[in-house]
Length: 117
Image 1: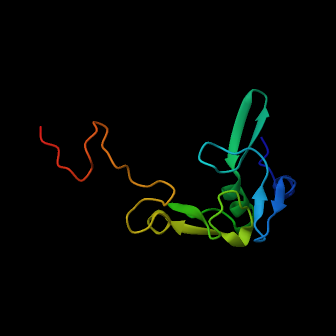
Image 2: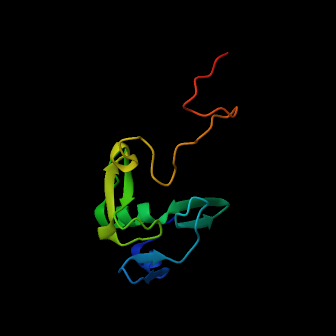
């Protein structure tokens, strides 16, 4: 199954007022663009900003995430995509800003409260 190429991705991009290249195709539940292909009963999906990074800059280094320097999840502009370690991407607290820490544990008590049991 062929990986989508640069031209295929660019056919689904619109430039916005910030000169970001905004993906106009399918979007997953986390808000990231994706593209899929099917062939002979097999299917594969790609996260488009990661795919664009690899098409332009090469393989993503091991244990790295792709950070949108423009902070727009649907942006594919290569110079807005940067490979960073997970620690850099998620910040000092270890959590990405889009995924804040939960306020309560599964059983309902606040995380800052010690569970006694």
